[in-house]
Image (cartoon, rainbow, N blue to C red):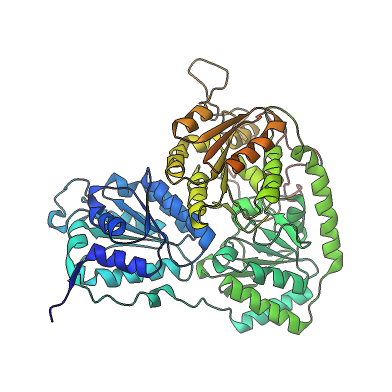
Length: 607
C-alpha cells in the first residue's frame, strides 16, 4: 500500500489542530506562505492577521496570561525585518515567562549563504535565530524535513513545561513544502508535564524559620499565575495567618479584599505592604525574583540582617539572585505552597496576631491617606481618580474583566489604585515595554471568548502601539483603551526634575513653542474604526467608561490628565550614578528605608 504523503506545513497545521490550538497570530511574508496556507485553509484554527509582527507576539502574550497552559498560542512571522520585528516582544515574553511557539519562515535552503533577499547571512547561513537565543527559551532552525516534526513537538513541549517561555522555530521555505509521510505521531504526550515539588528537608527547614518568626510575610510574583497557585496561596495564608504582598506582576494573586492581603509592594506599593517589608523578620518569596521596582531599589527588605528569606521558584537560577536565602527551594509555586501548608499544620503554626493587628492599622492609615487622591475632582484629571472610577465600574458591571496596566506613570498607579476584583489583572513587570497592554488586552479578550478587556496606558505608550486597535476593530472585540493624555513622558519627567532639576525629551512640543502639544487621540481612534470619547473633567470619566463598556465596541477614551499636582510614590530610591560609590542591598542609612513621603503629604514633583 502506497504511503500517503503530506507537506511539513500541512503536518504542523494538522498537529496543532489536534492539540486544540485556538489562535494563530501572524503577518504575511514570502517566507511563511506555506505555513499560512496550511493554517488558514486546512484547519479550523482562528488565524489573526496582525498589523505588525511584534503585535502578533503581544496578542499571544495576552492570550497566555488569561489561559496559563495548553494549548499554546501560535505566532508566525517571515524573513528579514518581519522576523526581526518580534525581538522586543519575544524578550518581554521571555522575561515574563509567557508560553508561546513562534513559527518563523525563512528563505529556501537552496539559497543559503548567498545573501538572498533578507537573509541573515554574514556570520553564517541564515543565522537569524542567533539573535533570539539570549531572549527566548529556545531558538533554532529546522534543517531537514524528516526531522522537522520531532523538532516541532519538542519545541512545543519546551515552551510549555517547567518555567514557560517563548520558543522560536525557524522553518526554511523549501522545508515547509517538502513531503513527508502522513503517519504523524500522537502530539498529546508533548502537552503534558509534571512540575517539580520542593525538597522535603528544605520544607522542614522553612517551617522551623516560620515557627520562630514574629513578623512573617509572603511576597509573590507572576509565578503564582503560571502555576495556578492562587487557591494554594490563600490556604497557606489562612492556615498560618501570614500576610501576603504581591509584586506588580503578581497583582491579583490573592483577593485584595482578603484580610491578609497587603496589596502591592515596592516603589509604588501600598504603605502597609512597604511597612511590612521593612519590619518583617521572615520573607517567604514565591515565584518572584525581587526586582528594584518590587523592593524600592532593594531598600525595603533588610535581608539577611534582620530578616531571613525562604525563596521558592521553579527556576533555580532565580533563587538568591537579589538576596541571600536561608532556604532555597526549586519548586512549582503551587506544590511548594501546598507542602508548606501541610507542614505548618503539623507543626501547629498559628497567626501572630500582634503582627497582623499592626498591619491592619497601617492599611487603615493608607486608605485614609490616599482618599484625597482617589476622590480628586481636579481638571485635568488625576491618575488615582481615573483608576478608582474604573475600578468601581468593573466591580459593578464586569468583575471578571481582564485588566492590563502599562508601564511609565501608570506603574505608579496601577499597583496601588487599580483594585483587583478578580484574578484577571496583569502587568508586564520586567521589561516594561511601552504600549504592550493594548495588544495584550486584545489577546485576552480573544482567550475569553470575546469578553470585555481594559488597557490603561499613557499617551507616549499609545503613540507607540496604537495601530493594534485596528485588529480589535477587525475582530469586533469589546476592548477599551484608556489613554492618560498629559503630553509628556510623565514618570521620566518627574524623576529627571527631582534628580537634575530639568527634563530632557520628556515633554511633547512643536519646535520653537513652549506650550505642550499632543495628537488628537479621538481622531486617531476614529480613523482606525474605533469608538472614541474625550474626557476633560473628573465627573465625566465614569459615565464615559460605562458608555464604552455598554457599547461592546472597541473604544478609546482620551483623558486629559494633570502633570503638576502631587504624585504618588511610596518609595523613592536613589539611582547609583556615582561610579565610585559603594552600593549594596538594604535600608538607606538615616532614611527609614528611603520611603518617599510621610503620610498624608505625597511627594511633589521637585525642581
